Length: 382
Ligand SMILES: Nc1ncnc2c1ncn2[C@@H]1O[C@H](COP(=O)(O)OP(=O)(O)OP(=O)(O)O)[C@@H](O)[C@H]1O
Image: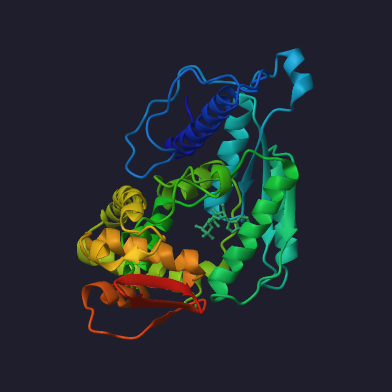
């Protein structure tokens, strides 16, 4: 008898991502002409992005690729690659850890784990140690807990996230890991899309979280197409103890209110498929945003004069979505911090092009100033 369907689903999701990593690794080393390619190319190509929202179900790979650990000459040259799981001890990342522990050895990949102690609740260090023990029990090695101190920048959620990713980056580098797996699910994706929608800042913020992100694609999200219920069920049937973060239920946090009040209300009004539809929206928006970004990058050269200044008449002729992207890029290049640059800022700069009536300079975050001078748009730090 095969595993429970929920366990099969989490394992398949992780297997796909591990296959992608093996494929990329072998392509990288081939492209760079490395003689001692450490990984054998997989026997099949995985269609679509790893864990991509709305990706068609693919059958389990028939002949899994494997790291060539049996090659003695090779063993001397480099150790097997390492993949880490970022685990809070919650259901999603415990399910992820269990699937990684099961799948990685079959592919000759080493599997480890890291848990971050945010130090935000009394006893969080003890809990982190407990997570470490659980990960070790699953057979992961190396496993560590990383204590961070959470600042205040951008609010409590953003500050905790920044500290967490800094610790995860450091763990990846310290261990020379190929990637870190994160347990974000389709439900998390739906929440992220709604938060983006509420910010009113365009399709990039509707595109939610990417299946692959970070420097060199170091972060992977195998569960983006899986629902939270499946991860919970997989923990239950494998008798994995999970920890419910009280922050997840704390109405002081926007995401928690959305999870416990907003989404249930939407589901009640619009029907059960709303989470899936929002996650699909993320993928479609990401594709659209990528295409528009590429268009803007190409168009940018054609709207600059010989001195590199932006020509207002040429900007005016562009579609607004392309023009605003060029303006945003120019503001960031001039020193405006991307995270503080909102749609309303760019709209104001845009009015220097589309609604010109001699208005003065526009102040942007990061002491950046945008002004129109002699038919040119000048954006620079003041
Ligand atoms: N303290 C932590 N240590 C390590 N990784 C973490 C930690 N908190 C979150 N993560 C990673 O980020 C992912 C998303 O976390 P988040 O808290 O946003 O969602 P969640 O649905 O509550 O996940 P989980 O059920 O795994 O806690 C987790 O699945 C995990 O991979």
